Image (cartoon, rainbow, N blue to C red; front, side):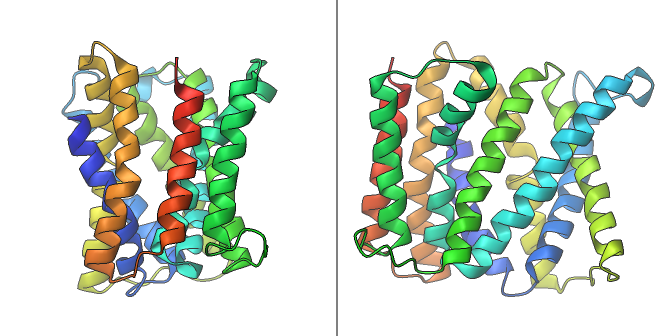
Length: 282
């Protein structure tokens, strides 16, 4: 189940980039969230603990309203805009910096201490980001697309903060994610209303792209991942499998999207994942 998730998530960067050929980034986010809500509703209502409106407390609504603002609303608007500005290999790889950002937030928000090993891990991963962002010329500090790089790294910060919020919320997984998604959809509707525009109906290619993203990026993949962790006798070993995803993702980006994979992307990704594994090593 974990390897299935790795396979599915590895295709998402390609799905983002291809779907952006048919839809503006904001509309891609909107229709993907719509499809994600529909899929999660089906999965949740057929599960053992279906979400029931009558059982929700004010605290549940406030928690989901906050988490839904960060994910899917703000996180995906920032992330997909980064994909719009950068090559898929660059935007997708920079986003994998989030576990290192999580270390910072754990120190600041959870009061955890950091050791020398943690500082070394952060430095190694940060060096990987610089290598990728500068196209393999880290000493030039000339970024391939400054705004795109800033947004891709910012998405890692948003996801890490969302993860902290998610850790503190002990509700059932699918119901919680579904309610978060519903609030995210409400924010997206408000976003378009405030801007005085409404998402156009996508073309058939655009729709199937958002359907794929809604199912496999925002929907059932999280459910499969949580199930894999529950079935595992060693969650750390299963969790480490997820770092196969970005490397496999480069294959799909090359094969499907048609990008030439840069040596700087592979080297930078190795630094990022290496730093993460150093930090995670028991």
